[in-house]
Image (cartoon, rainbow, N blue to C red; front, top):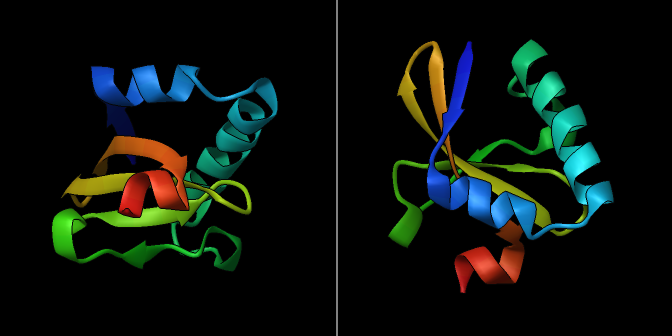
Length: 86
């Protein structure tokens, strides 16, 4: 599986503290091994984020992504639950 991201994701990512970035890399490695591992809580979104999915990075930090093809995922956004969904 390949993972890509845009400028917006990169800008959002840089705003997070180092511990969140480290946890992000841990969870992305896990995602590459098993995208539906229970700790990721991988789930579909609705409303504004229809056709996107979300995984947990920390207790409140989420990554929103879109499945481009069966083997390609594009990371769209990273932030707290309230930043992303309200």
